[in-house]
Length: 579
Image (cartoon, rainbow, N blue to C red; front, top):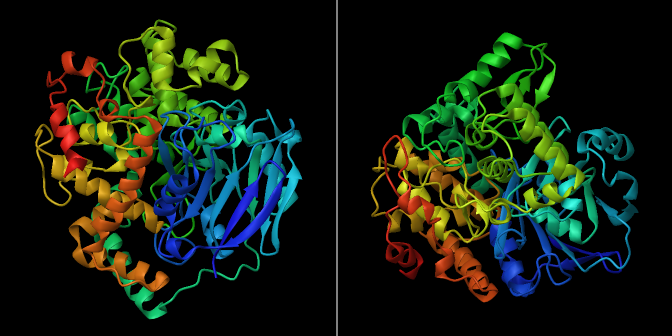
């Protein structure tokens, strides 16, 4: 039977508990948000002793379900002041799930200055001193960690930013090649780990019993249906868009749509877009050779394989991975059109423990304030090194987009609830703008990826400028609440929205593991239950409908090339969840 592992940082104890009956069918985001709702005081300080950090693999994580190596991490966010779920794909949650652990809850508060790691195996969990690793480069310490614990373990850690409790610090996991490059980046959850002086959770899956599956035949039936859908959809299939060019295939598409935020959201088109696109990355891999790889998986069992390894001119490794959000944030948003510079900035984010979206937004705001010229890659690198070193400027930048804009007196602050916006301009794509505004997570495209219908025509084409999208936005957020609970990558949405049998297979997989009797009609209900808890937490934390708003400057600054403003009425935003 699955257990909850509680890691108490006050007395440094690790205890296993039976999972309550009320959590029987919960996993992933559904479980993290429920446990945070149940156990964390919404009014607590995010970096204080009352906050908790909850890690939960998804329902099918740890099985052979395709593209299912996802973990949800939940807490009260130091960045937004509300609830947070930050998602990542790696081998780490697969090992956690196979050990029979449904959730890892980190609680308590350190009573000394020491830093600690926790080593989790089939025999239990033990603390080990981690002071020797503090303040060091993640790329520097990772090889020694695998030499110490074995190259089959998986590691969750924080970098220098998390140690300094910076609000844009993420939680890092090793990828399949054991480099520190997979992130639960958004919301500052690395700072929560840092506040508790937790440096590592090292998981060893050797001898693990595996995930209990209530109905193996039903699970296999569903798995095959979903796998067939993923292998046949143009976006997710082998040789398809994501596999061939990675997520950055979207660069030219969104740029053409006039919704590619450029130079701190001054324009929707970037003249250097083609130079930083997925196609350009694929060309780097082909012409430079060496370790260059497109179609790289972020975790074992991923069939979409949208990650990459980008080579230097001599074929050695520059960085892995440059994703769409990253090449936009550290590229177009900062006026930088050089993939080598973007790769260096990405490497630094990996090394320091930073969310690349927030980092790019922060650098762009600093450039807007006159600390550097747009396009100055050297100054951008220097800013990230200031963050690493914890200089006065670095500590300002490390607190995220909204904070940095206030500190530097910048009106053009592309943030909601303090969190920086991702790579889609809300003035030019109204549905994703509504998602940014009302998401429980702050500006977050993954809360409800309406880009599918608005730009890509998935599940039917919707006009990107249409303002009447309350139902679309609501349904996408509910569906996402469910997908984030399954342990599948959000990109399965492309296939299951267009291929009904794939959607059916997703539900059958979950029923097979849990022994539940869900139908496709239950997906929205389950997602709504997750969102209802998150909304209730945020309201109790003091967030109100006035926080569910797009920044004012977008209401009066026209966005080229379409010269559009944000014109969705507040009443429309408020009505999305009111229904």
